[in-house]
Every structure is written in structure tokens, then in C-alpha cells.
Image 1: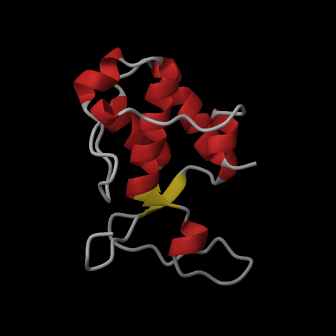
Image 2: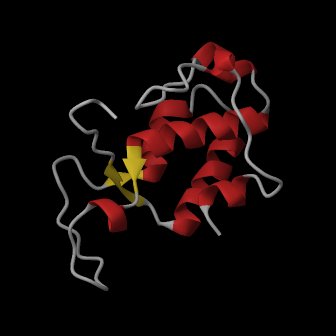
Length: 122
């Protein structure tokens, strides 16, 4: 099972245009919209933010096959709990952050890599 399937067993939730620039390489939700959004939209916005800023270290960080001894870059690993709480604790209810964090940690753990953007910003 992957993270979106854990958060939305009935299928994905599409964010409305007022949620922020949905085509940006690094999504930043509109905090005013996010505060007023229902829990499903809040979870979708948190996940979209997380997925456009961080990535699974197994796919992004050099390591030996079958080993979790990663060769972390500067400012890594990024801890999922810290990243979500620092960005969203003052914007959405703690239960929403905990639910998204639980799905993230159950799939990959708490240590993530910064998402690298290509030279075009994508």
C-alpha cells in the first residue's frame, strides 16, 4: 500500500485552484484557504507539499544494496515529523498532521531526503 492509498482508500482527492499553485515544482498551499478547508483537503495539501519537497531516500540517496547506510547530503536526513509540524502546526489541527505523518512513517519511516529539482526547476 502506498501513502495516498492509506490516506484516501476511496481514491485521490483533487485540490481546488484556490488551494495554491498546483503546478509549482514545490507546492506551497495558501494558508488562509488551508485553515478553512475540510480535513480531506487539508490532508491532500499536506501530502502534496510533502511529496514536492521531500522524497524517499531509497530512491534519492546513494546507499549499498540492501543497506540503510545512506550517504546523506547537507541538511539531511529531513525528519518527517519535524518538517510537517514546523510547516503546518499553526495552520491545521494536530490530528490532521498526525494522520498524514502516520501514513508517511508507516511506508518509509521518519527520515527523508530533500527533493532535488532539475535545472529547469522541475
